[in-house]
Length: 352
Image (tube, rainbow, N blue to C red; front, side, top):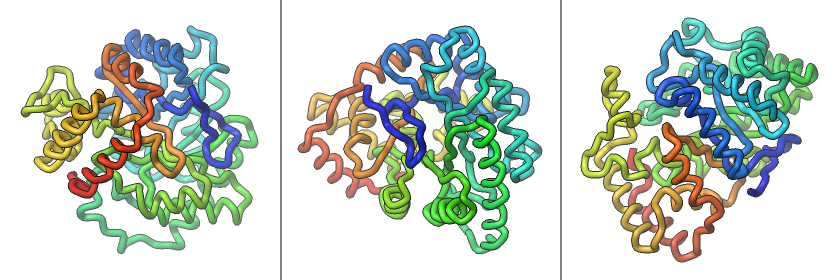
């Protein structure tokens, strides 16, 4: 498998990342460990987690459990040097630190807590899960209002956090830093502030990106190319919508939508399962069938056609789902299919 260097850092990772956010909830520890083994055998060495995982739903009593499960795998296999581990500190959330925003001191403490749960002496990529000032991610873009932000407070916050990240890197606790659910303005300011302070520059940005959600393609892509920041694309299958499992109104037992509905949610995949989203999914499935492709393989392989550095994050609740994903790795999207995908994108530009 090809290797990718994250931004301007010295951290090299596999061109595909394995996400672990269901480990400890929908995916039992033993099954999670089996998934990591299978992914590593396929050449995937890059593993992504977060202090707030598992999700769907997020519960106070399970905060940090996915890191613990990954740490147990690292301890039992004894092959820490074969993988690259990424984790994240949670932004303001009632489930973590009672909603308190993170600052430099909290970042320092959170890094130590993650290291303990991961049973390792270093984190290869440490990310800020979402901004303290608010974010338009998770379908909040439809009513996003940045008017109450204070520019100076934001810049002061960035300087404080970058100071803690710099100290952690100097201590060998982290190797590179990244963002998640950030905007073009935020990414630019993080880079500018790091340059001013001589602090670590953001090497990556983990934002949602898929055939159905291409908000990244314009302003953020321009910033990332010019600032040498790698996109880590989460939900490349639109939380399973592109897999086809929900076709015809289906709600498979154990699926993300079913679990969400069973625990009091809407079962709409975080706002992705809209009439427009379903229609777009059906159109992409028809296109894949026309060209003889598994739609899952098309969705993942398409990401490598983009004119910027991108590492898709794949994830599965069951190992048979992971096997289906792995079967498509290495396939290249032919030019006629890429052009057809672009035409469909103009027809369904932002379906959720």
